[in-house]
Image 1 (cartoon, rainbow, N blue to C red):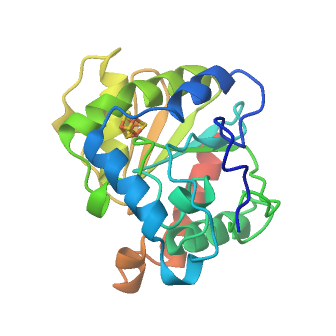
Image 2: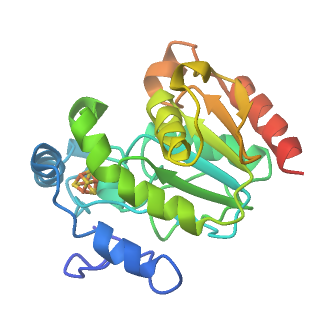
Length: 240
Ligand code: SF4
């Protein structure tokens, strides 16, 4: 089973538009040997319940509305989620939690995110990750984050209407700060990550932090639906 053409060299979501040339470049990237080995290994070995899938197993660009006011930034595609389905926050437990919350707050047209062909549409959202491939144990090295940062930066340059950024997890939060540090002089330690903490940046954009909606956080009660929906309500007011 697959929802993309496995022989195509292009990402199935990027057919035209301002981001197409960047994404044609991203999906061919092999700059991080450790990560490239891992993403291919996962795609070959697969998880038992997905044995009939052809995994994407390549870098994954962001998706959503390039004119959006709200940007969601995660760490990286999930091994058996995005790395399988070719779309971030698609086909894994974190996606189930996050998209359900977005739907309940009127920010997505449906509560599920399963595959490229599931009909999911966002309302005024673009979603991406600071790292475009899945790293082993979800722990990228500093060098890998640095290697990939220029793709994130170029994506940010193209998202002209973003007013609010919601970083899902500390690595996404810090990745956003590092991007803004190129233009503004501030100390990273003055922007402490925390769930529901937010900062107005020197360019007027607001950066919010959220615990990552991973099963580890949800199953331990560190994150729950009320917490995420309450945060999304505040962010919606922030955009308006
Ligand atoms: S993580 Fe980024 S820089 Fe490294 S191989 Fe993937 S796309 Fe390339």
